[in-house]
Amino acid sequence: MAFSKIILALPLVALAFAVPTAVESKPKALEARQGGAGSVVTNSAGLAWYDSNFNDGNSGYSDTEYYYCFYGGASDFPPIGNWMNFYDMFDLNQDDSLDSEESGPIQGQLYNAIVQISEASKVDARVILGVIMQESSGNVYVGCTYDSDGGANCGLMQAAPGSVSYDSSNSQASITHMVQDGTQGTSQGDGYVQLINQYGNVYEAMRAYNSGSVDESDLDNAYGATASYVSDIANRLQGWNGAGAGGSNCGFS
Image (cartoon, rainbow, N blue to C red; front, top):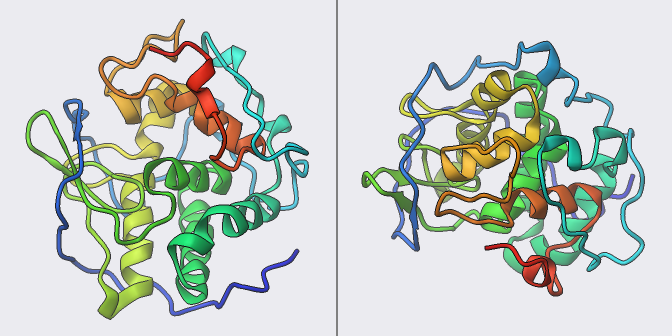
């Protein structure tokens, strides 16, 4: 694996951080369940979407701007065996997106955080990375968005209310905390752990995370959020770099 630009950093130290300016609104937040550090996927169907071996998977699309339009229910989206491996996926996003957003040390801290939280939560590292790229392009300085109740969705994964933002004085800790918020949830809302436990697959969890509601027969039904959201992340998992036309030609509405 090649990580010439990555500089590994300090371990996690918890705490709270400043909240930046809002940039858009979001649907109403999901009802909060127990979230935060220690939350883990326990649903056996959900655990089938987790692989601890970062070498598993292919090398991704040969054309990194290629985009396949996914429609329908979770069974119409790519199985975990079709995903690219985590090392190549991180390199792809590092080369095509992260370099324009963050320095080498911050990229290394992001890598550390994804690895740590994936292992702790049993949410696949590729899913975490895909959500980060979808929500913030890996920009640690991203502003908060706000749901219809006024709750702030902050950080790299634009997580549930109660989530934190970047603190440059405690960089590794705040990056890890942001990844924890989106993956393991907060005291006020669900993360991917809770949603995978509820739905038993990552694609319905993605729709719930973005919209707060799930039409199991049509994951492009956005309920006022981003119709292409699940298809976008499915493509990221297979080697799309986020560039090109993306889902604009798919008729998502």
